[in-house]
Length: 240
Image (cartoon, rainbow, N blue to C red; front, top):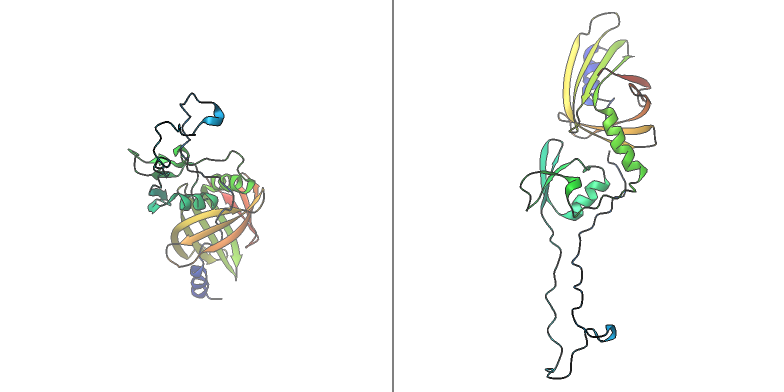
C-alpha cells in the first residue's frame, strides 16, 4: 500500500490506540422537609384532634406544600461549561461516570465553583458499584503520555498520545519506511473516556475534534507502565 494511501486510511481513525460511558449506580436524593414535632400537651392518640369547644365548622386549611428546590446546575466537563441541568440529569451523568466527585459544579447560592462531592443534595453512596470504582481507577491510571509502535503494510507506525486529567488528549502520529526516518507526521486532539470491563481491562473511547463519531479500543493493563491494545494486539508503553 502506498504511503499516501496508508496515511489516508489512518486519518479516518487516527487514534486507534485510544479511546465510554461508565455504568454504575449512584444514589442521589433531594432532602425533603422533616415534619414538625407536635407542640400540644395532648396524649399521643389525641394529637391533631381539634378541640370541639369554640371550633368552627370544618377543619382548618391545609398548610402550604413545601417542595424541594430543583436548581439549575452547571458543570465543567472536558474543559467546557455544560448546563443548565436539573438534578435528574446530574444523577444520570453520575451513573454514566461523566460527573465524578472532583467535577466542578455551580448552582444558585454558590459564591464559586464547587466540587460535586460538596453538594449536600447529592448523596455519594459509599457502596459504589465495582464498575464505577474501576472507571475512576482506570482514568487515573491512563493520565500521562503513552507510545505504541508497530509495522503495517511495510511501514513503521508510531503513535504517541498524552491523556490529560480533564478528559482531553493530544496525539502525534508518525509513519515511515522500515529502516528509514519517519516521513509523515500528523497531529490530532479530542476527548476521551473509559468504561471498565473487568478489574484489569477497560474500553477506551476517543472522540477526535477532526472527525465525527468515535473510535474505541479494548485495553488490558499489564503493569503500571504497559497496556495491551487488544484491537491492534500491540503493547503501549508509558513514557512519562
